[in-house]
Image (cartoon, rainbow, N blue to C red):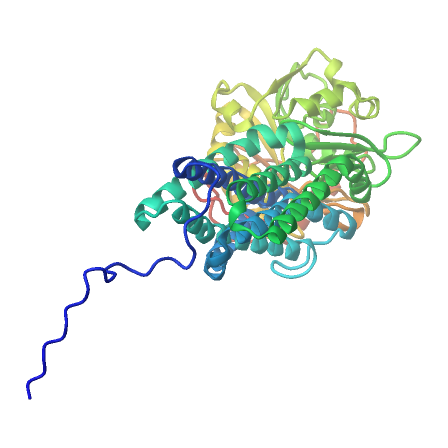
Length: 551
C-alpha cells in the first residue's frame, strides 16, 4: 500500500526563531523615546564605571607608588572580571529590569565607597601585604574584581532591555549599545582628572559618582520599566536606592572629619598644613614647640627636620668644590639645597626649577620651613622657575652653569623615571660649563643597589665620568624614595649620590667654604668606598623608551 504524501505545513506555521523569553516592554513612552532613554542610561553608567576604574588606579598609585604596575593590576583584573560578570548575568535576562536596577545600586555603593575604604585601611594599618593577598593591596584587587563583575553584568541586561523595546538585528543593537558606552567612558575619563579630582578630591569625587550612578540606574528602571516590575519589586528597588543614596550622602558629609582622622593616623597628630595642589598633596607636620618639621609630598617624607641637613650637605657640598658662580637646582623647591649653595662664597646666581609652585610658596611663607631654609627666597640671587625639569632643560642655554644639582624624587617612582633617563642627562650635560659638575640624588643604595647603579650607568652613557657615594641617615631617617612612610621605622636608612663631570671627578670639599656640620673629607672617602662595595656591573642605561628602574 502506498503511503499518502505528508500534508504540507499550514501557511501560518512559524518560520522564524522562537520569541524571546520575555515579551515586549510595556513602556510609558513611545518606543523611540524609550530606546533613547536606555542609551542615555548606558552613557551615564559607562561614565561612572570608568571613573571608578580611574579612582582605583589613582589611589593605588598614590598610596603604593609605581603607577604602571598599579594601573596594570587594576585594569587587567577589572577587564577579566567584566567578562565573568557578563557570562554570569545571562541567567538574569528573564528579569532584566530588576536585575539591572539591583546591579546599579550595588555598583554605586561599592564604587562610591571604594576610595574611602582603601584609604581607611591604609591609614589605620600602614602595611600593604602581598600583591594579591593581605592588607589594602588585597582589598584593591577585591574592589577591582567586584566593580569589574558588576560593570560586565550590565551589558547582557541592557541588551535585553533594548531588544524588549524594539526587536532589531543583534549587530545593530550591539553597535548602538557600545557607541553609548564608549562615549560615556570618554566623558568619565575626561571628567575624572579635569573636574572631579581637582575640584572634589578622590573621596568626595568617588562618592558623588556613586550618587549619579544610583540615580541614573534607579530612574531608568523605576521610570521606564516600572510596568515590568511587581509592586513588591518596585518598593524593594526604591528602598535599596534610597539606602545607597543615604549612605553615600553620609559619607560625603563626614569626608572632612574622615580625612583629618586618617591624615593624623598616617602623619601623626602634628599636622599643621595639608593642601592638595595641582601637582600633589603637601603636608607639613611639626616645626613648632621644639618638634622637628617634616614635609610630606604625596605621602612620602621628603624633608625631616632631624636629619635633612645631612642629606642636603651631602648633596650640595661635594659639587661646589670648584667653580660655582652659576648654580642650577632641579627640584628643591623647599629651598634647603639652595641654603647650602649660598653658604659658599662667590655664588652669583642660583636658578631653582620646581614643578609645583605651592611648594615654593610654602617655603617662602611658612615660618618653620622658611626658618629651616634660612629665608633663601629673600635673597636676590635666587630665581625660581615653575616648570617641568625635562622641558625646562630643553630650552636652557648651553654651558650656562658651573654646578647642576638634581634634588629630585627617587627613580623608582614612575612619574620621575624620565628625569633619570639618558636623554635627561644629555640635556643636563649640555648646560654645564667645561669644568662644570653635576650631582644627582639616586635613591637609597643599600636597599635598591640595582636602581642606584643604573642611574650611575645612565649618567656615564650620557658622556660624563662619575664617582658614587652614599651617606647614612640617623635612626629616624627620611624616605627620599618610593617607600611609604607611616613612621620612621619604614624610612630609607641611606641616600646615594653620583657626582659627574666631563673629566674624572674628585670627591672633596671646598676648602674656602664654611665646614659642613655633618661631612668631612675623610667621611666622604669612606662613603665612596661603602657605595663601591654595593656596585652592580653590566647594567644598561635607562632611556625614555626603555626605562630600567623598578619600584
